[in-house]
Length: 465
Ligand code: ARG
Image (spheres, rainbow, N blue to C red):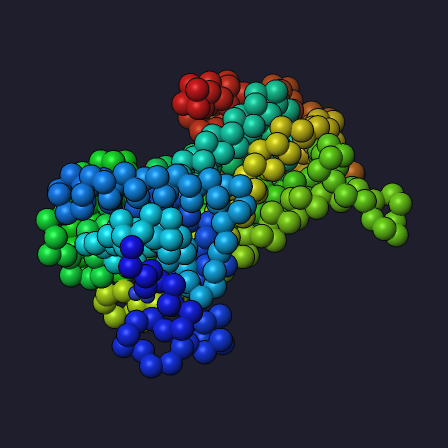
């Protein structure tokens, strides 16, 4: 066995170099500190490549056997924490390849035939992200299930619906929760859609132009479960729009989580008092003994900033790069990793926390009554009696003003008083001035009537399985 050229990396890249890399440059350019988490994808990709090389008689069957044996040992070393990651070997790819050659000799040096780290890293990141995407898809289902499960108990629980955070019209708590289910369902669609473009194989592009070896790219794609090939070698090694798409998806999803978090914080505050969270999701104060803080929701809201920041970072990373590969691309990993980690942990914990929400139905109802939430219903009533809507709007404004002055709800005004505002008002008005009457009246697809909301819950349950 001849010497392992990768062992010389500590001194210089190749015979071409007359002095070693400076220590500072070594640290500055190395990525092994963070890209080692791609190791499993790297080995998976290398094995698929080696099998294809052997099938195409580019390497010998014995080489393939040696490579498999070496990779099995490396897998074992990494899993058990015994693998020695070396900074001078720069990244996960060179670390694994160097160890392979150490273990199996020349076969290890043949692995890189017809391949470059450029198409290798693009393949690794796609493989790694694909597995994470599938995990996140499952978590999005969990999140939706938790919301639907809570909603199923509250199709009749009335709360004030807000616009401008002012009481607007009564809605059911279930209806409010189902709005978030819609958001997360669209997030899941976005994720499934980006997966299609993510799941194409760059390997075979080599450094940038393709390779002169008779590679069978389709075979590698099949082995690795890719749906297709990147069709242009320059694009294959240099584009990271799958990462941009992922970060946009993640940002949008975190924005949805953040809005829900903000509402949880509000609902749990003493001024709203709509819900309570299980103790295990709250923290206390070191100075104020009475405090129970919704820290998880606040942090989820806060962590949205870093994910949106990663999207900005990745977009900026790409914007000035000429074709094809540039070392800039090494900077795609940390934002991508952190976006995945943050979203995964956030969805997991939010789904759990939502499942543990206690609803204070009386407080919600009281708040709805306080804000003249049924004023629109009175206007609609007058319209049905023949008034133009603008006139009805004006009549009700006078009624609300008078009720406010007396500190009463519209439904508490005597019939005679109401009739003073308009003679068309009859005793049947009280039914729809009630919160329940107001909900029932919104019996349109997508509306808050309990019968509609129940149908939605059923539809979501069917979809989510
Ligand atoms: N660590 C590098 C990255 O993450 C691998 C590819 C390096 N290719 C190169 N020609 N320097 O992008």
